[in-house]
Length: 189
Image 1 (tube, helix red, strand yellow):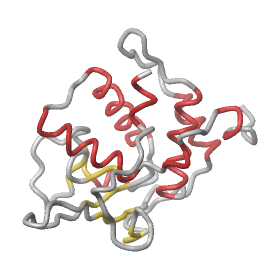
Image 2: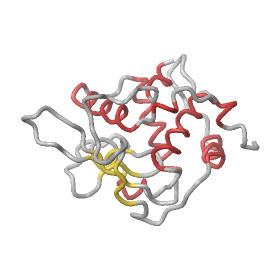
Image 3: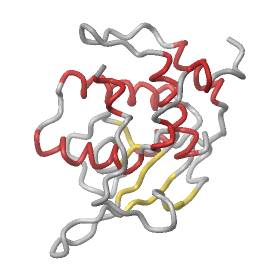
């Protein structure tokens, strides 16, 4: 299933982040936010109206477990999490800095507009500040929009490479084998 592959990528060895891990912590409290539990986040996903996926694709419980595991590892379920990344490029290219926002750690280079960086055609058409508040419905809608665009092949060639760089860099590989039965065992539906 293509949808499971989106967030099943391993980090790219051609990318680096400052600090000891994949993410360098910048600021955990950029805006008013909250810490949600994995069970609460699962409930938020389940409250959404049924999404019309392309034929042959669905959002499975196992995919949701992998996605929410990523949230746990990347942002510790903190809605106001902001991190900095510096993707490594060829030696002759100047290093750029990406800022990742919110629960899902979405990039200001592709997903949202930070108001300072030129923002042509952002995927989710939201401000980055909207991704770090305690209203997570727009964050979830954005992530589902990204997944649907990937399935539909909706990224232009020049943006596709940057998108996959972001996914490979921020996705937590220890979530690859998570299953809904194991990961959500403590959640009461």
